[in-house]
Structure formats: C-alpha cells, structure tokens
Length: 585
Ligand code: FDA
Image (tube, rainbow, N blue to C red; front, side, top):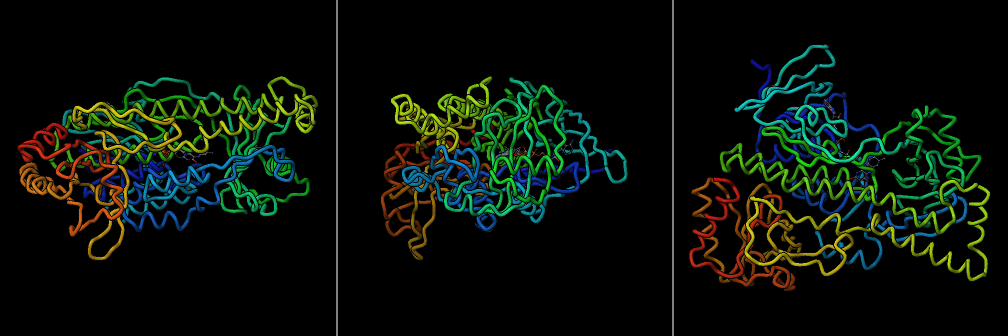
C-alpha cells in the first residue's frame, strides 16, 4: 500500500510542473506536486514571456495575469536589442525586438489580448505555484522522486523525503515528469530522444549594480558585448541581461565545454562584469554565480502509457528565442484539460495519446529554432571580421576598419546591418511563438485544405480557425456593459466552447443536448447585434472563416477542435459525432 494517493503526481515545480498543478487544481482534479528542493527557482533564468504563455495565465484568471504584469518589466523596456563593444563603449548596432518595432507591435496587438513582457522565473514560478496550492494542489518540497512503476490502473512512485531521509511511495493514476533537463522520469520511462546534451557551456553571474547611465536611453533586456579575445569558449561575445531595470543583471558568458566548468568567485565575477560593462572601477554586489550546459535534444515521444513528460524534460535547448519556460507552460495547457477530461470520465484514455502527437513536433521545432539562432550570430561575427582563430589585434583592426570611407568599409557596414537585422528570427519571431497548429485525433478537420502561410511563418502569426490552430483573437463587446472581451476569453476555462452568430442558435440547443449526454458543460456564444456579445468592429466576422449560421468548436486549450462553415442538417448529430471522436468515447 502506498503512503499517499492522488490522481496526478507531478514531479517538479518549475514552470511546467507548477502550471500543470495550477491548471489541474483549477479544473478540480486532485493532484500532488513534489520538488526535491525546499523552494522554487533561485535564479531568474527564464524571463521573456510571450503572448501565448500570457494567454495561459489569463485563462487561469485575470488576477493571475494581472499579477504577472505587476512584477514584469513592461514590453516597452525590452526593445532595443543592443550589440556593442561594451556597455560604456561603442555601439555596433541595434534592432527593435520582442514586438517593439512599430510594425511588429501592431501584429502583437492584433494577435492577442495579452502583452509580451519580461517576467523573471523567480516571479513566474511563485505565481504559478501559489495559484496551484491555493486552488488545491498538495505540494511537497524537499521531496525527491527516485523511480516509478506502472501497471494497468496507475503508477507507484518512490520518493525520498530529504528532511527525514526516509523513502515512501505515492500512488497516482497518472505521473507527469516536469523534472527539467536531466529528467529522471523520462529516463525511467525509457522515452526516445534525438540530439545531443552538453554542446556548450555557459556561466551565469547574477549581480546588482546601477547601470542606468549606460542603458536607460536604449532600454533592452539583452546587451550583446562583442569583445575580440575576451571570450571563453570561442563565441567572442558576452551577454548582459537586464533582470530588473536597471539595477539587477545577469551576465551569461560561455566557457569551453571540453574543459572543467570554471569556479566563479567574487573576483572573477567582478572582472567579467567590469570588462563587459566597460568600467574598470565598477563595483558589483554579487548575488550568485553558477554554470549550466547548452543542450540540443528533444523527445520524439512524450508519453509512456500513464506517464508523461513536459517542459525541459522533453525539450532541452539554449535560451535563444526565450522559448523554454514558455513552451513548458504551453505543454501543460495541452495536457491538463485532457487529463481532467479522462479523470472526470468525459473522455476515453485514447485522448491522452494526442498530447505527444501534438506537442512532440513543437519540441522538435523549438529545439531546432533555438540552436539555429545561436549559429545565426555567425554573419555578425563575419561582418565584423571576428571569425574564429583570428588574432584579437586583427579583430580590433577589423572593428575599426568599418569606420573608413572606403568601398570595403561601406560593404562591411551593409553586411553588419543585414546580419543584425537577420536576428529578428531570434528576437522578434512572433510566428514561432504563436503559429502552432495541431494535427491529431483530438482535432477533426472540416475537409478544407490547410491555409498556407502567406508570410514567413517564423516571423508572422497567421490567424485562422482551421481546426488545430489556436482560435484567433478579436475583441467583442458585452451588449449591456460595453466592456470588451477577447474571443479567447469566451473560450477556455476548462470547457469546450461553441462560437456561432445570429442564425446559428440551433448549435446552442445541440450543445446542450450533447453536453448532457456526454457529461460536458459546453459554453455557447451567439455573437451578434442585441446578443450578449456584439462584434461591433466586424473583426470576428472577418476572421472566423465561417458564415453566421456556422460554428467554431473550441477546445479547453483554445485550439479549434472543429468548425462548420454553415448550419448542419442535424447539428446535434454533428456535434455528437465530433465530440465523441475527439474525446475517444
Ligand atoms: P525546470 O528545470 O525549471 O524545473 C524542474 C523542476 O523539477 C524543479 O522544480 C526541480 O527541483 C524539479 N526536479 C528535478 N528533478 C527532480 C527529482 N528527481 N525529484 C523532485 N523534483 C525534481 N525560457 C523562456 O521561456 N524564456 C527565457 O527568456 C529563458 N531564458 C533563460 C535564460 C537562462 C540563462 C536559462 C538557463 C534558461 C532560460 N530559459 C528561458 C529556459 C527556462 O529556464 C527553462 O526552459 C524552464 O525552466 C523549464 O521549465 P521546467 O519546469 O520544464 O523545468
């Protein structure tokens, strides 16, 4: 007999584990989360928080979303991605990033009710964890997962209570491995991976110093310092990252992975900070220093029967594009409602198979993107004549050469401009963040061909109600109060939703009938004049790709499950067929 019982045991209380716990508790599912440490993230690590992640927080509640904004550095402070010799030294170039270019800003505003922001992991984790615990999650800190065994009815996990030194077991119906890049759950489950771990080494130096005079006039989260000969590990570049504007910073500095990881003491940290800031007198208050390895690995399958992996356990990659924590939280949004539906008896277990089918391609996509982004610094180095093996003095001369009035120098300046602008694939890749379209048995296509991306799909989000895509965001207005709501606000909350318009009322009756039969509470919104929600601007009518009598069926994770262009001959029959197929009933 196990000492503890729960429906879902979650290993890890990072962004993935805490988000899963928060969502499951919100859906009314019993769950337990364990963390081998006594508390949450002790360094700011993840920070770029994209719109899709903010939509998950918004779905957890406006209070959760608002608290994130309260602690975040606002999007406007994220924008001037700077490349320089040092913070005090010469600037080589910059690019507007993270939705701060006016054109990109417009696209962000049109894509989502939420705002991208910079929320360090030291704020994100406590927010998600608090949400989880206050809504019912049983959390057990200083508790280390050791192993698990699964059978036909559940999973028995063995854990170590690190305070007493005693081992104990937890019996759960499902086990979620959100235990990070060295996932023991993934290893024990024998899940398949592709790629390599430890392709590079980095050290983090977290410190306090007021650097306002160097940065406040060009606010950014990332200052890339290119100093010939100054690097460790061959990339010739250090990163000074804003943690709190403008007095808390994280320096990320490469080290040679083939050598032992360096010991970073106060003297070394101060030296590195002085060098990158370009101020030999700089005094810093060192908060912490640690090393980490750069990985290039993803799971090709994220489920073994009752065991699931998510977050860094499934996708391990460098911080480029700021995708790690974001994707981890988005994994949880995909899995949590499916677990809830199965545990509530609303769905058959086969629904759970769609998690890996939908999210493993995302794992591959983001690991590939993040590693590609590292190599795409290459053209900047080349343009600066800072290729590998070049003597620091020669590199310095090349830097100076770009200031000449020769044809070569003009060509070099052009090459630098182009190389920096090309980094939008890392620093302003809205499409990478928002364009996920799922293809699985938990989606029913309507026979229409998949809409092609009419612009670069990594850079630009393409709104569509094509089944599998996330429901497009449009503002609609409450008829009585005039308050505006996003179409995403009308969906989610753990429920399936039917969106229709005037003439589509038969879908409402159908949803009621089928919902009663399947034990589902299906939300229905008839959008139109004198209805509860009014599409005053016509944006929703333009975006929804159906007629007023048609409908869009949206899953609890705000992805379109199915759509019907017009009214069906037998709307209840259609909805029953679709939902039974999606829910594997
Ligand atoms: P995470 O590693 O955060 O959590 C794992 C959890 O499992 C922890 O609670 C741990 O204690 C626990 N655990 C592990 N083994 C256990 C065991 N055996 N028993 C019990 N508990 C166990 N991402 C992003 O989206 N935007 C960004 O801007 C950045 N920037 C960034 C900068 C830097 C410098 C780094 C190093 C990383 C980033 N990231 C990022 C990546 C981001 O930090 C990372 O992807 C997430 O923390 C992953 O979240 P998880 O919850 O999957 O794992």
